[in-house]
Image (cartoon, rainbow, N blue to C red; front, side):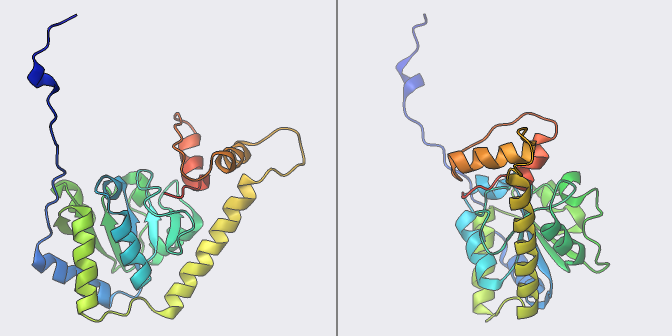
Length: 242
């Protein structure tokens, strides 16, 4: 028991800092996106902390840019979003990693670009690939020799989308969009196969348990797991809707 002062319980409002990107850097990134043939966004947990999901959806859908997920970025877009190509990196899937291999522009949004995401710097193999880092932390924004935008993810994505609209950008080519669609369909089919019980035995494999549980609780649940093989399998197989 303690006699706390009343001011200890007074309401306090904590506001999220939203530093805006520098206009010159936004212009540079807009130019890079307009000239890129195979752009790819890598979304991390910072996008979720910033509440940047809608801004990411708008940019990716409007301009046909595929989005690969880090572990922390999973759920930034629904699993069935046309531009969500699934997990990327050493624990990633075939769609995101094939697109990463050939990408000529990689835009990291709220990701630390760590070893899991970059597969220890082997995921991106185009010799002329350019990186953009959007992060509230300058150290992480500059990784991979990126054009560093030290700003709030939502504010940065909104500014970039506005710049592309003002420039009359039409987005990626139909050929690239068709490749993204085909790779996503192949990946989704592979995931469905592993999540679905085969019926060949009474025993269930771990991926099948994940599928059963996901179907039972839906795509709006929060699942907590321990270490081991589960984090990687959940990254690939769990289908969140938000």
